[in-house]
Image 1 (cartoon, rainbow, N blue to C red):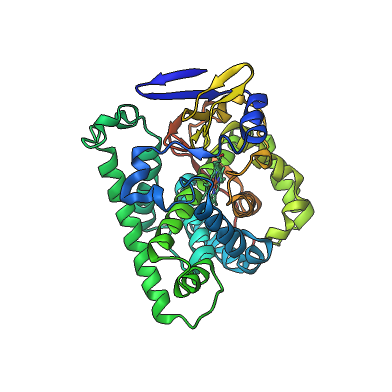
Image 2: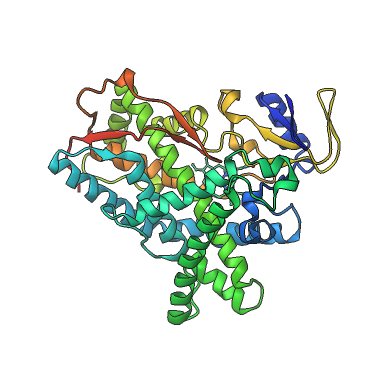
Length: 400
Ligand code: HEM
């Protein structure tokens, strides 16, 4: 489908076969991004892995993240930190259990994702379950997603860019400034206490900074990308997974039974256990299929005229791959150069969080809510979230 939105030609790809042509066969020709005005806040697009073209600086940032953060040895080295954060989730749900209180699953999942990410990135705990700081951070991350994902007149009529008629650039800039202020504080603390270690991503980045290979600005923009791309996608996927399980109680029991049977009664699931839990993996895959966190991916752009199925996609056209509508398992491993670099970490976080919630507690919907009546409406930023928060009551004590 081709849409002419103001001066922007947009091509929507809605079948898996055509998506494969865009993301594999002509991967390089479609590897650039159209850049929404919101992503230009504080010149983010000039420094960001998510928006830079596939050229030298983009390659450098992908290489740094792959080697310093997402490689198997790096992820294995930081798994103890993540285990500790999952234990805190367990303790929080246990408290709710004792008080007979419902858990806001999206909110708890966001706090956990935030802490898992900050543990992996800079060995710091970010937020407490019962405080407002996590909700504030959630609002900031959602503010960025909404700013970048919302239709913005300035993107279709460039003359309006300077006026920013909907105030989207101004709002996104405020969110960016808040995140940069947090990162600056963490970087300053690290610099003060640094003994030259490279035990987490930030220490490795500081090391590169001291060798003049990365500026502080580069570090801030990279952290922003990783934080924004990694928290709300992970927690959103978790909330949808729990929603689907609570709508299908027999499937919830199957996950619970698989964990009890394979892992054992009084043991916590470890990251290395995931390959032994095929039903849990199937639930996560099905959640990705039904509720893809980025339903149009991040906008791609044609670098040259490309012919697809007899049609010409003109140079500079925006290309949105409608993963949501293709309605079948989109094997993300099939994507080309722009494939999500965070998937190895997301894979561990989503499975472990889900196993922690389902393996340690029974779950029921609040009184008067029937599984088949659960609200399934979606809310779109750049990512797709559940419009009405899922609340569920934990019913078993934590095994620990
Ligand atoms: C459930 C979790 C996640 C899902 C479903 C997901 C999905 C995606 C998708 C669909 C894209 C766009 C691919 C494209 O445009 O072709 C993407 C890009 C990206 N993701 Fe993820 N992601 C997840 C978690 C993470 C995590 C944990 C991180 C980092 C810690 C991360 C960092 C990024 C970055 C930096 C990009 C931009 C890459 C580039 O343009 O070169 N993501 N992700």
